[in-house]
Amino acid sequence: MSGLLHGLLYGLPIITVVLTVTALGLWFERKFAARIQSRKGPTMVGPAGILQPLADVVKMLQKEQLTPASADRVLFELAPILCGAFAVATAAVVPFSPTVVAADLDIGVLYVLAVNALVLIPVWMGGWSSNNKFALIGAMRAVAQSVSYSVPMVLSALVPVILAGSMSLSDIVRYQAEHHWFALWPTIPGLPAFVLFFLSSLAEANRIPFDIPEAESELIAGITTEYTGMKFGLFYMAEYIHTVIASAVASVLFLGGWDGPFYPGLHWMVLKTLLLFASIYWVRWSLLRFRSDQLMTLCWKWLVPASLLLVMAAALFVKVGGGH
Amino acid sequence: MSDAWLALFVFLALSLIVPLSMVGVAWLVQVRARKDSPLKLQTYECGEDQAGPTWIQFHPRYYVLALFFVLFDVEAAFMLPWGASVRELGVVEMTVFVLILLVGWGYAVKKGALRWQ
Image (cartoon, rainbow over all chains, first blue to last red; front, side, top):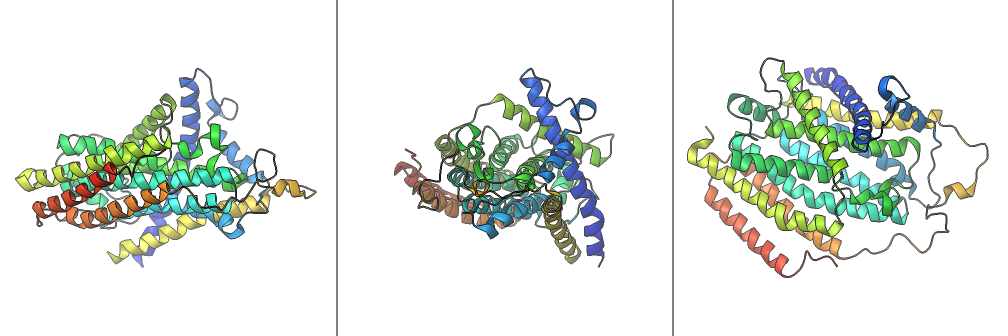
């Protein structure tokens, strides 16, 4: 019974905050990208255009919802809803502070990785059921890429699991608070594993330099080509939520989560998440996109063996007594 | 323990309600066109009529990738529980396991399974 109440009391605010941060992140990205390109970005709605995402939502709500005549109707309608649901669901186990966590599962890491991988299914559903060639090619690329990059992602997430000896995200943060942040010490499996994890979660979220699935110059809009209004919005939103939560998970696993001096844990967690989030956009607007085959080569020839070696290094470190 | 799982299911329900309500509200408040047009329901192919079927067999290189994925994902599934309790378990056994896997990986790379042309 108390579990139900806990889920409601923590779940509602966490979902609300994640959605708000996502909306602000949208505004932030547009502003940031504009400054990088010597533009001004949104300026009209609200102070410095900060209400622009709200205006976008209103616009998307008004749009007529169309389903192409030749599409597979059930899958087509279901895909954006599932995509949004899976993206939000990842936030359930993330510890935002020692107490603020919706469901403190003792297999949190496994849950995050599993739900992350689930997002693929609605992406493929949407791309296939649209009955549109651009959508199909986009979905094919998205699936191939996410499937490939989920391997180094899982393996590099294994490094903090080994070092902390637990699969619960809260335990991993607590261990780091008592000892060291894993990105700092042990530096050898820690820091490269952090970089690997971050890169692979960028690839999972289809962000530049890994955004070939929706390369707008060749694929119109990838899987979202046939979607209108709020259904397009849900795919778009899911991608941003994915990015926010990937930053949160990376800071939990490698940067000590809510651990930090002077301020309460929640502040540190938000600060670390936002810093990682901003760095994603910095990368996104500075680099070009890779070709599909370059991505696959990078993943399977370099990242997978590298992450296997890091896992073994972490296990050795723990075995020779470095792990307390 | 069971409390956490209950909370998780509540969270999952909430995260399903959010997109459902967004699509629902959008369906209610959307501005509908006064006249239906079959053109609007056409598949988008840059304004041309749709040429040929979309649901075709795809390039086999994706199949090879899927095989690779299954191989390494199952392996990762074995490694996760081992990683959580590595303090009690052996590293040597896992090293042998990983080495066997790397041999297979090397063979596949040498055979050109990852060459895209």
